[in-house]
Length: 346
Ligand code: 5GP
Figure 1 (tube, rainbow, N blue to C red):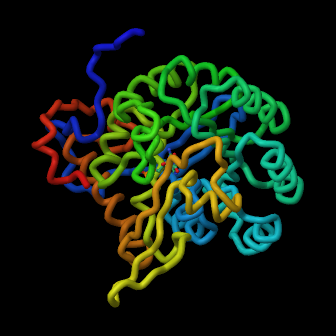
Figure 2 (cartoon, rainbow, N blue to C red; figure 1 turned 90 degrees about the horizontal axis):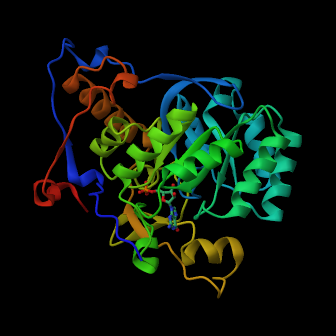
């Protein structure tokens, strides 16, 4: 047994210190970034925020709403080939840069991925997603996928430590998904005791990825717009959102009415709800590591997007960053005691 005694930080443990700035208004801030990805060499331009590959968030409807803002959606892996065909016939060409096909690492997942790409070779992004990215099987799957698709952008995870970020980049991934346990409907930390405070995971993993010319996406734990700014401030290249994009017209999940108020169901992808829906039952060798919640219906996602983009522009103005790219260089975090921030936590 060993104890690491360095202090590790979550979003709620810090605030961003304001700095002298020459910017007069948040309208002067650009949130678009340009990336050339490590292995695929693909050039991408957009606002580096992503909808999570959950069936309540990463929907075809979400792609169409978010791509208008050049925001990305990792489409969940449960759509059928027919549903994909219908979507691809309706999506404008200019949206092709703003969505990924997601897959797990099972044989059926791999077969479905091959089928999707044989019918829609123009799709550019693959998101290989497993709860625990530390297994040899996962690394081998990333290697195999890179060999099969040399020019696709591969995003892979989830991990939380630098050495595994390096291993996955060397195995052929372009972008590493970072986050174990911070998700709003995730119960991994409760069920297993495993996890890593998300801001420290971002800082350490971004450093490892940037050293090799790769990128990271911070996945999970953003509850309020300020958390997105803190994730970028810590060095995340992309930020993935689940709960913040749930509950909208474009989100998946049942709509429920309780005492005249509308709610939308939101659940973890390994919750009992998701497992029953997609696999018929909860496999008895594993505990469900996700929960189900009802979110008051929030209308279309457009207002929420305007709200968090406005917040992010404002953060950039407070620290004098005219581009999102400069935010991390201009960020000084102040450690705060939890009670200073508790007004924000759920
Ligand atoms: P949020 O933005 O809601 O805090 O986090 C979204 C992220 O939570 C997802 O992108 C995914 O990484 C993670 N997640 C989604 N469903 C589950 C689940 O059932 N269990 C766990 N452990 N994590 C989940």
